[in-house]
Amino acid sequence: MSIRQMIRFPGRSGLGLVALGIPVVMFVFLGFTAPNFATVQNYANVNAQIAALLLVALGQMIVAVSGGIDLSVGSVLSLTSAIIVSVDPALAVPAALMAGLCVGLVNGIGVTVFAVHPLIMTLASMTFLQGLALLILPVPGGDVPDYLEALVRFTFLGLPAAFYWCVLAVVATWVLTSRTRFGLRIFAVGANDLNAARNGVNVTMQRITCYVLCSFGGVLAGLFLSARVASAEPTMGVQYGLESVTAIALGGVLLAGGIGSVPGVIAGTVALGLMTNGMNLIGVSPFIRAAATGLLLLSAVSLQPRKTIGA
Amino acid sequence: MTMTTRAFSSRPGATDALRFVLNLPFAYLGTALLLLFAYFTRPMLLSPLLLLLIVRQAAPLGIAVIGQSVCMRVLSLDLSIGGVIVAVSYILTSGALPYPPPVLIAICILFGLVVGLANAFFITRLRASSVIVTLAMAMILSGVVISLGQFYAPGDAPEVLKFIGQKRIGIVPIALLVWLALLIPFALFLRFSVFGRYVDAIGSNPNAAWVSGIPYIRVLTVVHVMSSLFAVASGLLLVGFVGVGSMDIGSDLALNSLAAVILGGVTFGSGKGGVLGPAVAAFMLTFSFNLLTSLGLGEPGKLMLQGAIIAVAAMAYAVRMQRT
Image 1 (cartoon, each protein chain N blue to C red):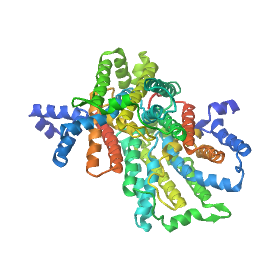
Image 2 (cartoon, rainbow over the protein chains, first blue to last red):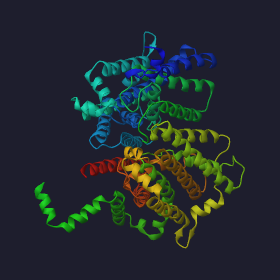
Image 3 (cartoon, chains in turn orange, purple):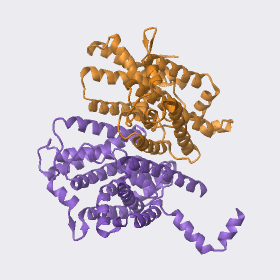
Image 4 (tube, rainbow over the protein chains, first blue to last red):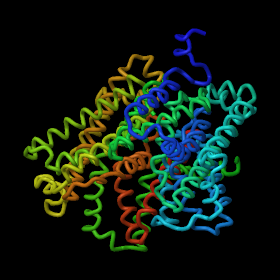
């Protein structure tokens, strides 16, 4: 396959030159321009900053590959944060997972059984869950269970806990999408749901599972982030919904469905993380950073080929 | 199933009436139920004076809803409304641009035009998803405005806007008149113009519209420019109504307008929907937020209600469409 073909038809992985090139270019650029970029401490910081985003983005990728989108993960993250400080410590994780399961089921059933547009459905649950999180925990604070804090504080073989969270999530998602029947089916559903259905795939079931898995990604990110800052915040995840979409779109995941890969998501997340980190190091105001993320999102979705016009 | 059909068919008048009510936009029934609920729990809210105050409060949302409803009729969405309004409030009140109010208002309108064109460019030419594009646009606009706020803080609204937003003629608020002055001509325009027909055609079947040579891209561009201009008008009214500019003014208008449009009977893929339904829904939402506040449920309750309304109404319409 020639290079030109690779740019044009990166195949089912979506790993084109743009997806892989951006993080590399950013890395080199920051290495030369930003002070303190090329230090072990900063790499550890970047790793910790992008760990939560990576957890969310991997879930978002699963939904996107199946042809949907989930804007509500950010609120799931916030809700998780609110839940774990509000219930009995022993029940914190099960309660959060239960909430994630419910959210995923509602999103999935709304999108499949009721045929509501995924953007509208998840926008609605995003708003609802943000309200719920604020209802459970009106002000930031609370005590995160000790065992959760221990899970994000340890270092093993000189590497921080965030690294192991990332590796675990990446391997799990990779196995799920590339080594199971479920993975094969969601690619089929995303590429053409009618064809998939005619070939005996239960499209409804696969889609609902995707939304549930995506919500679990949000729950894990919520657990990780709350434990890391050792406190809960009911608006912790506001920006994660759109940032995860930005990350996967940068990583070559086709939002129309059927194309995407775990390495692509890693590349996209690293690219976004490096941009944030670089702006931090140079000293740009956080609000300009939000605007820059918006610009990046615009350019990432503009590069994607799509047939339909509109929502 | 046959039993119920027979039971109903023996009283054709009743079924027809029931079907008619059930086929109306949810906003009508919802408003009636809300008013009834308020009658029993908070009768104070139903005094003419307070109702008119609530109508005045609903006017900015109502104006934004007009633009949003046309967007949804052509299967697109505009969530950049909040960003546009924050920017309008900043242009008008910060004093960063040292011009008299009429010039500032003209700048705002020009600004709306540019934002609408930019949205439309990304949505039609680059074929990016309208939700993502307009959400990104909102992020960019509010990010830029907030960081500019370090240099010039937003301040008082121009007197002329305060007058329009707050004063009344007799008992009727001027804001309501402005709302009607935009709503009625626009409704007539959509009903009787060729453009209105194009909008309906695209909404009911985009592929058929495309194939039959309707200027799809031009219509979508005009719709998005309109939506941004209505957002600017809504922002002008809101800034006048509140009296001062701020960094989070109108931030919930994008989602509220979406909820109002869905409640008002405009849904994706039906090509149906008027302008009146969404307007009633805008009143209904504003009324329900007032009711919630009077019942002691604050911001969380409001958000949950918004989300639940959007989800439940969208699902109910989907079920209704599958049945017909």
